[in-house]
Image 1 (cartoon, helix red, strand yellow):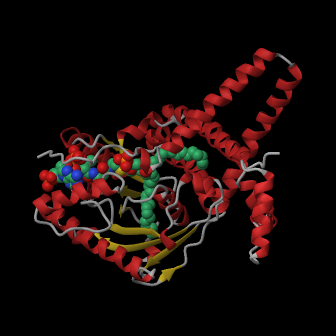
Image 2 (cartoon, rainbow, N blue to C red):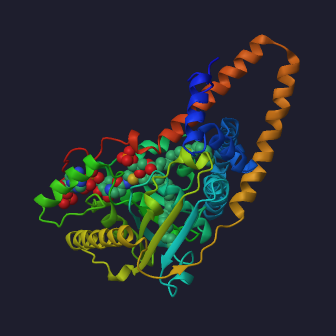
Image 3 (cartoon, protein in one colour):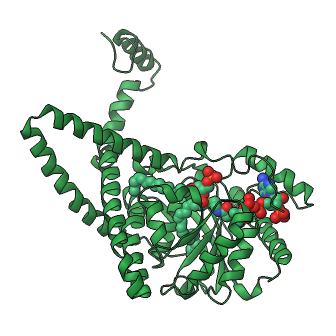
Length: 412
Ligand SMILES: CC/C=C\C/C=C\C/C=C\C/C=C\C/C=C\C/C=C\CCC(=O)SCCNC(=O)CCNC(=O)[C@H](O)C(C)(C)COP(=O)(O)OP(=O)(O)OC[C@H]1O[C@@H](n2cnc3c(N)ncnc32)[C@H](O)[C@@H]1OP(=O)(O)O
Ligand SMILES: CCCCCCCCCCCCCCCC(=O)OC[C@@H](O)COP(=O)(O)O
């Protein structure tokens, strides 16, 4: 008889006997103990069916929201400000689902280190956020903090053009006036400036995120960017890629007078965790720590070269904060309370009810119809949808990261 894990039953029994003789608990006993210890919730979270249903809710509700966003087009011509406000609410319906999965499904803890005197300003002014780009779920943590400060619907980012084609999120971004870049400065210098100018009369407070490293951290990209640093006579960074300065400079230039400050944000995870979206979906709990410093925009130099030098210095400081975190498990400064909010959970439950009931009804009618062709067509459709979700999750994986930053490129 074969053991479900591949070995023979005899071999397992022999292992059990040997372990019992040596006083060690058998692997079988350990496994069943673990199963008993695992609560119903955890057991449910590990089930593929749950992941499929979460994916389905995200895709079905997201496409519905994309459609509603499309319907707001006539409102743009009649009342632009109203259309923008409506789109902030619609965008919230999508992005808050990933916050619900992070904060409530996986129970990931996001802790904020910052100056308590600055805390009341967060969410009550426009700002430019500078964040390290090292983790697969850094954008989800960013969104979670946006939600905690009431700016999730209006959150903005300087994002690579490739993500514009991702269904649901990429399509939502068009209506939220997200700034896309091709990471080709000759083309970006005009388009990025134009998109930023449009945000000057945005009717809601927003945070504009710039990942100045331009791509996610890998050992190879780090080594190459440090060669560039050496050629430029800049100090080496241990935990960051050399920041690209042009996007930051153009953002500061165009949002001066609109944004009040730069929020220099440094993110890390406790116990060397390397979090992933798949882990989150399986209910794995991570522990994120974010250190935020508020820097008034007036204190940032205006000239391109001076602004670039300022950003390089900022990254040297950020590198120091990461080193301190790795050595001590803490960032400088006190922890400030910014609890997760119920909004994302309620939104997620409402959308789940809205799209799961029709799915149930459809499945019942499908099975009772008994038509093999309809059943096969539905199975093929579900397979296609699951491939699409898998591909979207793949966009977040560093192992599938772009080749950008793998070689030295020069735009000047
Ligand atoms: C209280 C709580 C506070 C905060 C909470 C935190 C966050 C919440 C905020 C908001 C959340 C909102 C949304 C989040 C949701 C989703 C986001 C998800 C992901 C999207 C992210 C991305 O897509 S990142 C990629 C796109 N973004 C960027 O690239 C931005 C940075 N890049 C730039 O600025 C670039 O300059 C550019 C894109 C504008 C142009 O790029 P290009 O390559 O054409 O030109 P460069 O100028 O960069 O290149 C030439 C110069 O660079 C030097 N060089 C060459 N090779 C390298 C190398 N390997 N490494 C480093 N540098 C290199 C070269 O020498 C040239 O130097 P110069 O001195 O001549 O400039
Ligand atoms: C809610 C759960 C349902 C599951 C589906 C969610 C799928 C979300 C996928 C949307 C992808 C959006 C964000 C990807 C963010 C990201 O990190 O992009 C990388 C870029 O910065 C840099 O790219 P690179 O140069 O490749 O490192």
